[in-house]
Length: 265
Image (tube, rainbow, N blue to C red):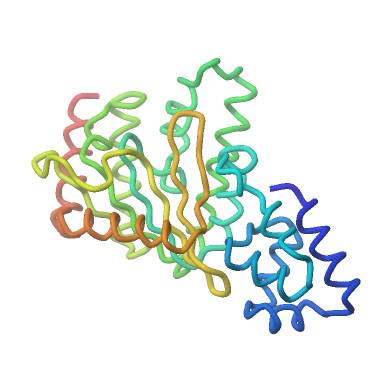
């Protein structure tokens, strides 16, 4: 999201002689939330935009020109979600095809990124790998954010890279689980259809902002902050999680799968 919307909001607030805290109070929001919007890091929900318009007497300008109000993806398809990922206190991922980015090893990430269309040059691939591994640094903090991952069994069975790459990658996830840093559940093939079959989903919660959902498909992605829509994604995630294998069984399956790949190397 560009900063134009946030700049305009700041100008209107300053013209009205309000501090961020005063505007937050008038619009029934938090000061950090206002700061994130003004800095271009956050998209206000429809309701937030309506309250801001009311508090600033700006008619429906903030509502009408809210980024993403036209239903199109906001900015580059992952940039906005990446900002949220760094701010989140809780992240719940669902992966249908491959290991979520924040859990990827270097060799696995490189194998995933190599198959892009058009193909990346060696230099572009190196940079993309660095960026992806940089996302995993949020796991360096031993307690925050709280991360859960729900993996379709296809994620474990699809051999990306080589058997060695797969063994190393799944072992890496197992170690994070064993260290109590992340919680991982596997959705077994035997469950058949489940509520998240349509694609990848990331749910994020924050200390001082409403939760968001990020959904992604081929070359497209969208951050949803409408409370009703986010609620539907959360419900679908929790329904699917209820059908997944428990933590211990998921860990045992991952260990066995990593061992199988090790034997095939």
